[in-house]
Image (cartoon, rainbow over all chains, first blue to last red; front, side):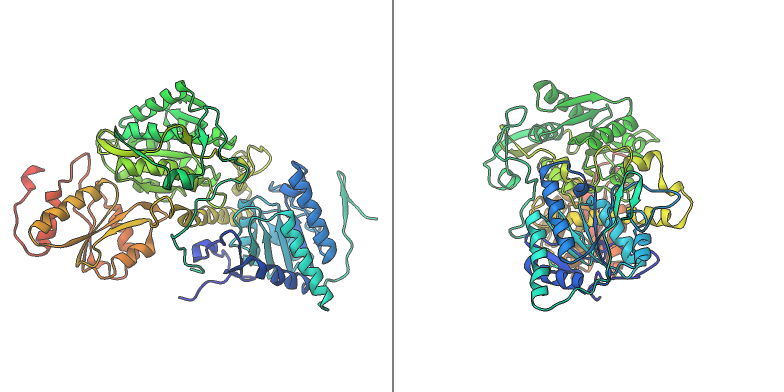
Length: 211
Length: 415
């Protein structure tokens, strides 16, 4: 039987989890690209090229980096902001995991229970998950693979995500900066960002603030 | 598989937030599990299985245990109470019944504690609703299931039928053959089930009485050392947040919202639980000596494939058969969930006949094996016994000889 590949969908009405298809997570020092285990170093440039080639590259920061619950979280958030600016990429938060009814505002938030709504609405073609609890990230990544053609990248602080098309593990602020450095290196070599022009939105407790 | 998971040099990963060498609340030294399990000198002790559970929990840096009496696990539960009195276990109390015990274990685990409990037979069934809830909530609780018959009619004797009920709960299910397995796997089990990519409950099963109430020689590490504590910051779900899943799911289940995407989320959630079971494989290798199965002489035409104490009975049957010049190989299955599919396929590739002796009426292990082998007419479900009957090695011998057309002494009158 052919080896299963973790590639963008839309894959199926209910796609399988990649783990059930024989995809094993990378060990420390490794990453995976579409299910292929590679040295972590190889994945930085591959991810950077994917992000620069996207029309709507988007970072989904989760609660583990949105809230300053320790100093490490704040440092990681800073590194993510630098990556977003270097690309450039939109920042759309996954502030928590609550099912939201009657519906979410897909333009400015993403929810693990129906992440495809945010992908579809904004026409996101490459995204990054970072600071999302692993269970919720896997849930969302698999649903995205099932119903959208978005290329998913996970910057995981734990063991990585086989349900993402590309996944790093044991991510730290330094590793995020290595990804940013890979983006800047490619730009210097002449690779141009294909991102459509946009402006980061701002929100307060009352909602979106359009300047 | 995208990568061959090699057992060689595979290390047990543990939290980087833990400081190895520091003392725990009882003054035990927190020790790298790779050193504790593989390098530290051990001493022989002669203990019952219940005492072995106590010995393992003493070194497990345990936060909470909840107890409720039911034979044959009562003694182990009481011995853990002694550890609480001595200060090794931080919290210990008796639940109102098995259902309550498992709910209280969930509460403690939701709060970020390492939790251990024990149950058996009707207690397992009474608590059943909690087990998929534990798994669905990603709670790495360990329950030692000392298997016995399920009522009715009443039997307190060994029978592994309750394991059949546990197979699709989303828990890891391991089956210890010996007291040494039980000791090593209690400690190793915490290390596997608490991995962030696994983070699932473990049902560590052993055969009641045969393991719990008989004495065996067990090699133990010094008790001034313990495994690293549980680190709730590695959890794949947030701790105790009433606004977020999984806690929120229980008071406001999204499956009740009638639309397509809710069902999709629920289905994906279930898939993720079973994905986590799959992920446990590579973490289990260093705990189980490099494989989810053990094998002996698998190049032979006839194989016995078994788990738990049926392995011991099978081993003795093989010895008796060898005295008569009949050669039989052995496959010991250690993990039932995840099931060692590829390992069993490989080990049985050349076997012409495969016997699966079991201590339960349905022969669930034989069904599992038949379901993964292509030419499964080779699999003979049995011999199996139930309700507390013993499974004499001679009965296995008789069954194998019968298949070879050799007339032997019958044990029918011993039934």
